Image (cartoon, rainbow, N blue to C red; front, side, top):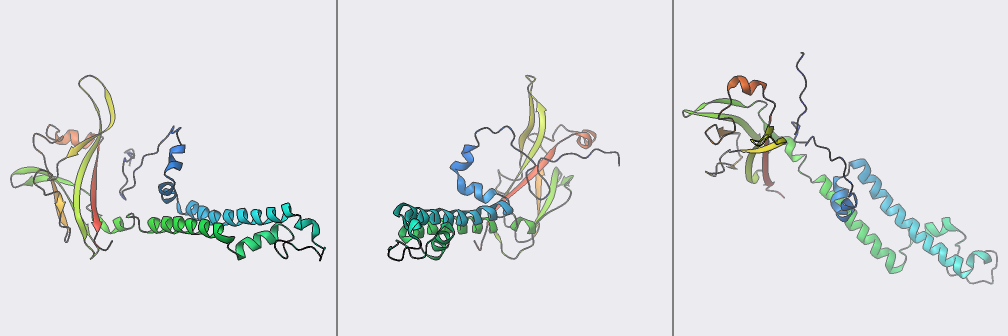
Length: 249
């Protein structure tokens, strides 16, 4: 078809199609290093995971080698009368093997435990993120506008495929649309709240069976003065946000 493909603000799978450009204060990512590691892609997370241990081994291997170098053990490798600090340490490779085979006393043990805690926690959080759980939450492909109890309503459906319920589930909807104010200011991607039952408490869902979510088009609705013809040609997006906790976790 000749229709141009619209670029979505939020993809159907829930991924936000927004990229942050011209970010100069990148050091802020390092101040929250744990979240930065969790947000990394899996290939980079595994690379950091491997490097954390490899760099630690290299660092403590270098310390062992430096001890032997400063004491002069490396200058007396063939001198059997010389008593070395560490037996059979004849270079950096053997120092590295010693660092891996032994816990460089208390320091290496403590540093290793800290790295274990950070890395295992990081991997656990990555595995347990709600991205996969969201795959079993199904939204209707289309929303419809029709009359319900003599009220004009915008409606869509949501359902949960899993037996484990989502506790304290709540839903809200946002209209994403560029607009121009009465003063002539252009606001790109302006967010307007679509009421889906906040006043009555209907936005708190008991999501055991599929539910119909309804937005009443009244005087407070941004669709109140929009005709059907204008609705078909307008460039806007409705983003639905479902929040809650899995009862198991």
